[in-house]
Structures are given as structure tokens and as C-alpha cells.
Length: 217
Image (cartoon, rainbow, N blue to C red; front, side):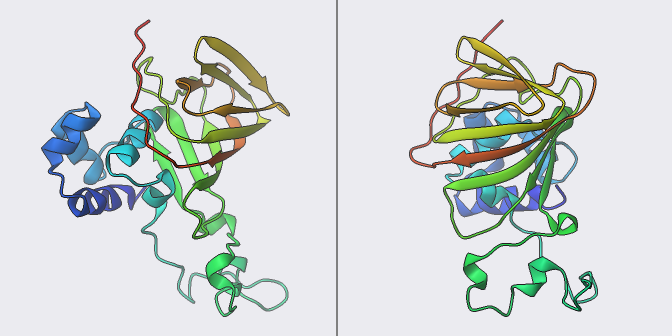
């Protein structure tokens, strides 16, 4: 999250959009975009996807910006090597292999108690492989906004409970349950329980960027 604001500003400028224009296109206030870029506010999942659509980047690209750990930051392993993420660097396959120690994962802390951790960082741009956390009551949107985007999502709940709304259907996933769905269908996630929800999520497919869908309830 420390680098999200900086990364967002960099991508916005690279796309030639002013802060005010990006805010208009995403349907939020310019002051809110400014607060995110300055690290003073956190976007919801729906807003993060809206940014990625307007800036024509994948959500994975919003994770980037964290520097690789220095020699002083690496943790020696029992076999004398450095941490797994660093151990692969000398390999000729390093640009195609991503081994990430938990302490070196890129992480996004978003509004309403939602956390994403990137589990791998390969050059593949059409895939996001993440560990997700929803605190009790946390939702993927600040309101009842249903978001949609290109591709398919696959999820597995490792702890807690997740309510998933896809179109007119509502599913409640408990520990050990999983799902897959077309992400172009408007959807919303929420933790209806009293304990944290943890899960492993896989989002595949970039394609054309879909527009957000707003649903009033």
C-alpha cells in the first residue's frame, strides 16, 4: 500500500490524464484521487478495478513498485541460501520464475478491511494470483456497487465465510468451498461473519475492459 499511490500517479501521468479527468472517468471526487495518490486514503476493490480499466493496466501492475529486498533484508535459509525470492535471481530462468517469501509479498490494504497479497510476480499480465482477506463486515465496494471486469475468477475459502453476489444470485462460501465465474457478470463480495475470511484467488484473462455496473438497493 505504501507504493500504490505513487504507482497510481505514475500510471495516470503516463496515460496523459489529469487528476481531475481520472476522477471524472472513475466517478469519484478529485480530492479522493489526490488522497489515494498521497497515501492518505484507501480505495475499495471496485474503485481499484475502475482505476485499472481507465489506465488500461492489469490490477497486478498496480502492485508493482516495491523494490527487491537488499542483501541486508534477505533472510538466510537453513541450507545457507538467501530467501527463496532472492535465491532465484542468478538463474537464467529468473524472469520466468517467481518464488515469494511471505515477508516479501506485495500487499494492498484497501478500504473497509480488504487485503490482497500477491502470491507470484511473473511477466504474465493476464493472470492475478492472490491471497485475499476480508475482515468481518468488509465488502468489495463502499456501497452496493457491483463491479465487473474481463476474465474469469476462481476462489477457494481457507477460513471464515464469504458472501458472493453474482448478478441476481447470492452464494455463501464456507471454509473449504470454492467457486469460479465469469467476471464480466456484475459481482460483489462481503464477509457476513464475525471472523476474518481468508482465501486464495486466481483471476485470469484481461481482454477488453468492461464498464462498471451500478446497482441501487
